[in-house]
Image (cartoon, rainbow, N blue to C red; front, side, top):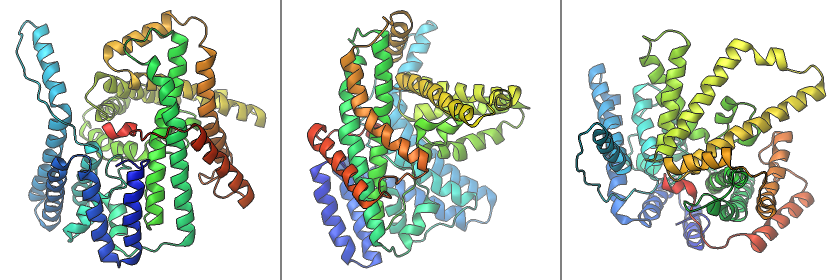
Length: 478
């Protein structure tokens, strides 16, 4: 079931109607059953996988908290982490590593035969495994106590609003909302509906239309010019953002009308002024997860390396694994390495050359202009990374780079440019308002007449030019 489908609308209406009349404990049981039904609707065979991960996480969490010896705590923490990563590795990376290992051996003169397994990738496995991983780790670190009710923990893992594409909300933030009675105010309901509508607009009108602009250029048999590839990279940057932010906004809105506070996953990333700022704004639940559960432990483990190289190595490894988290493709690894390299370069420039002190203009106009120059430059770097992300293989990426550098041909077709601007500009205008006011609920907090006009225009764009066929969200494949 997709958030932008009639099937889900009917499903949620039934669940929500029952939810409003049930007491707290029965609400949780209803949401647990809804999560199992929601996930099983994709492929009922993976229902047992969810149950297995729930049991591992709950059992290990209880044992870590109940054990007095540090060795026993580490044993059950290791059991949880290793088993979860083994499941993820088998389903997502087995064929990738086997095929590449065989290729490496062949290159050294030792050809081997291997058999690729016909493995079906469970929907959203990267997201809910990361949720189950945080639970025993946070208990081990003393940041939370385990829940004694396995049904509450099962609801945390299988909460259908976050099950397929996040956000990767941590147990210490979501479990208290599950265990305590929830209150739904009228303002919560209206804000939730506003977020749902905004998410639908981003998905149906912007992302799904930009998909038609992007797909032909990035097709394997495409012979597009470098200018078209550049423009399509811009379009894909907006497409990916609107597709994922559309899902995240709908998840937050649906959660809000049920009394849940689901974390913010995007905070105006295209207004970032440097690469560090970008990762503080883009896919926040993943970037903070990588920081707290990968970067920090790895940094501590590399204590034998002195000075800045320790930071650089940790960043490159962490961001490479972040890229590989998206899928078993070299392009995702390159995407992570690219962003890791940008972060390293940024840290070197910031610490050694004190850019702000030497370049920061003194006049107010000059300062504002300098901010917009940095935003524009940062967008170019982001779009280049998105081209790496969108390439279908390593060889396809090298083809795109060759076209971009050596066959630019001076310009892109006007029709392609018009399509990109027609779908991207409404988003940028609204986000500019959010940026200038510092209010992500910019539309919702306008005067009722202004708000009504904006909503009417958005509805007209959805009904008149939106893609009404139910298109899958990009991040469902991760």
